[in-house]
Length: 159
Image 1 (cartoon, rainbow, N blue to C red):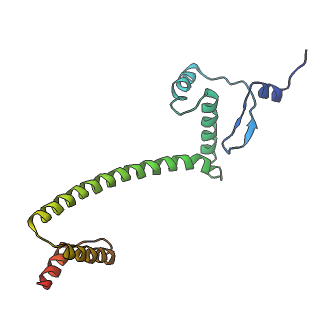
Image 2 (cartoon, one colour):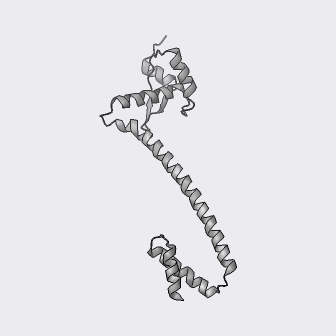
Image 3 (cartoon, rainbow, N blue to C red):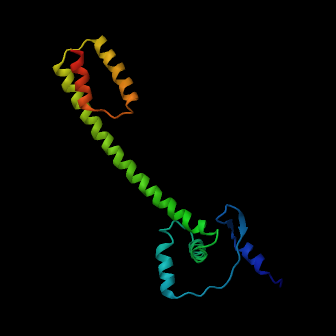
């Protein structure tokens, strides 16, 4: 009978995997004693964290806790970066949704006003094209900040 070393056993168990830096490395096997309540928690959470195995879940948990303990060291990035990224993603997605809804509502209101104006005014094509060019230039010049009072003054000065 041939005795196997710990490193051979680790490789035999098919534990060549990618570590958190994207580098392929072999894992080592060691005994782990945990309370049954802790194991119940792991069993209920590891899939929710998108971990295919309990081992990967525990590896992430250990790395997270170690980084927490080394807060004053460069390894802090490993602890904070994913959390900050997740928070920022959530804020951006929420803001994006609110802005999209607001822009949609504005587009509907502009559409209603456009149809109302078209229904009550008889504007020839030449005037319409000149108006569009003038407004495009104005919006560029004033950086999109449209002021109704300024438009009224401009229209009255043309009369």
